[in-house]
Length: 227
Image (cartoon, rainbow, N blue to C red; front, top):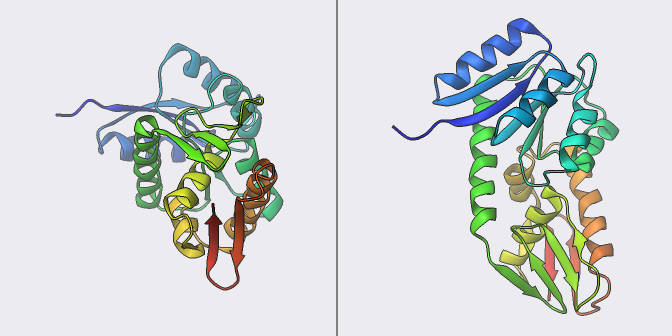
């Protein structure tokens, strides 16, 4: 039997937390269940979880605050937010903080498990990826670092790094908008679509020192990285 992957689950609704934990444990995961953000931070420091599932609205320390604190020392661990919030600004905030996925309540356990497995697979890919020469930039996918010539390194968020990596793998070709949304955001709804537009804008700014590199918007289809 393969070694169990440890997941830290922070959920202040006891019944929901128990259901998620039991369901994940039947899939060979080890789950650390916490009922507030302070306990979750303590458990995170004491253990070595491979993925975090954080409820946004929690007592003592909310999920966004907890994620910010963890991201200061760990920029690679995947984070999934659970929330009843559905406004675009809340979704964008979650991704900007460093979240990798955003699951809106109510949700099916099977959907959550699919998203967990997808993130873990992408994380494994990230660990084995090589350093990429992107025009006059060097892109270290594993470390999520972008550097122009010998200037100061730019730290990318987890989502920025994966979006740029997918654009690079399809460079000079159109990357289907719906496909990349479902792959990185788990859905191609309007909230995720607007969030991706924000990340594309951020990547364009970080790549603007090399005029030979462009991220083009192919209306009705998706994006194309020209380099």
